Amino acid sequence: MIVRIMGEGQLRLADSHHAELNKLDDDLLEEMEAGDGPGFRSTLHALLDKVRELGDPLPDDALEPSELILPAPDATLDEVRKLLSDDGLIPG
Image (tube, rainbow, N blue to C red):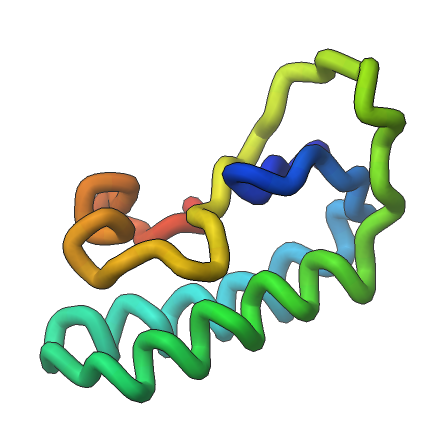
């Protein structure tokens, strides 16, 4: 799957990492619903760090369709709320 981190670029991740990322996404959604700003910030960074760790960056000139679009590390709680679906940032 191709994941875009806004403001950074795209990474290719194996589909086998979906469950691991989904757990962090679930935690992020809970923190957002509770209005836990510090927890939200920590989990957002953990999610983005995990994507960077597990993914292989695509070249800057590659324009692959992104299956997932994740917010920038400095995104606010309100900005991330606008990106959410009922399943969070990562469907499934």
